[in-house]
Length: 164
Image 1: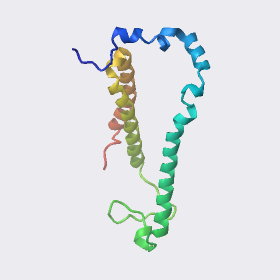
Image 2 (image 1 turned 135 degrees about the vertical axis):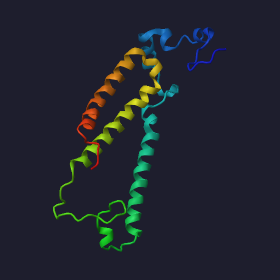
Image 3 (image 1 turned 90 degrees about the vertical axis):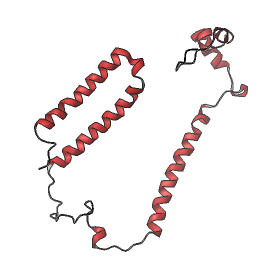
Image 4 (image 1 turned 60 degrees about the horizontal axis):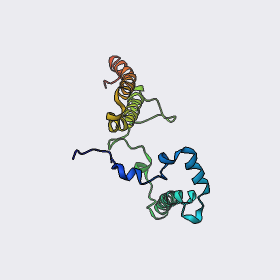
């Protein structure tokens, strides 16, 4: 038997379920759905989202509890080293009182990181559904990658990726 990613129902199973949406048509389905009451075993739509709501409340509660407990029980010994900015384990460079100016290359690097991070977010679903999207999906992703490659090549040619 050929293995496939899709489940194919044998023909007798499809014909044995005449109440299926595809078998009774759109109007028949909606008429049956309206006549179906909660006493007959329907699922209340509010109850479907209750676990998600509980999980959100638990996550928020854990985060709030962790922050509050850390501030109440943590050590409060502040010194000059703890108040100063941390720069990767090296002595921080002195900055003027207003904060000073940073080179634009820091911001360009941050923007490029964000752009390529977003690119990966869009590439993963495309890679998963690549065989189902056919030529349209391929051309859409090629256009998307081209739109990201143009500013990257521009930045590269201008020397924005070189650290002097």
